[in-house]
Length: 188
Image 1 (cartoon, rainbow, N blue to C red):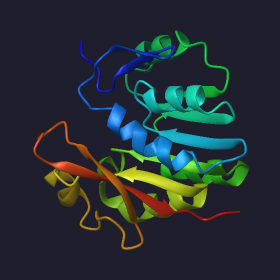
Image 2 (image 1 turned 60 degrees about the horizontal axis):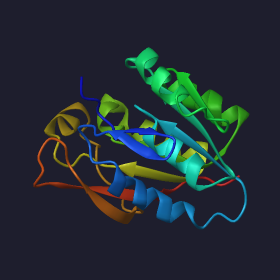
Image 3 (image 1 turned 60 degrees about the vertical axis):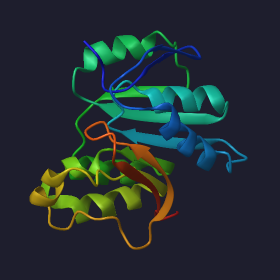
Image 4 (image 1 turned 30 degrees about the horizontal axis):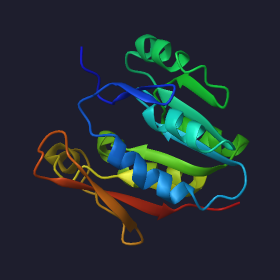
């Protein structure tokens, strides 16, 4: 079974997934180079945890909490092959309430919401606000090629204060480039 994300084990790509990951990762990595101190990342919808694993390899002072729920047991076995010491991989389909609880107990330097927001249904604005409240910065990927997101939420859009960091190829239509954007969060 081909996975959605590439499978990364101890510094190497071991199996290509359906999504292009390396270029997307370079966009995230470029942003993270600004941190000159330990920093924290919350990866929502982590899938095979490609981004969290790579970040903890490339940045020795990076700590990641990653959430995934779909086929978690298979994904957890994959993550454990890396013996991650600064990555916490949790089985949870996050809700808006969960984000509020997380915000009450902690705050992250960076939130990753890559190909997540088009899955939140008619609560797009509430999710966007909750993600911003959870961290200083949010990197989000927008599925501009997915018409179901607009049907689920008429508010689904790239916010006016978004800074485009780059583009990535859609796995649905290779001719379409999805924007990856930086959204200001709410620093504490």
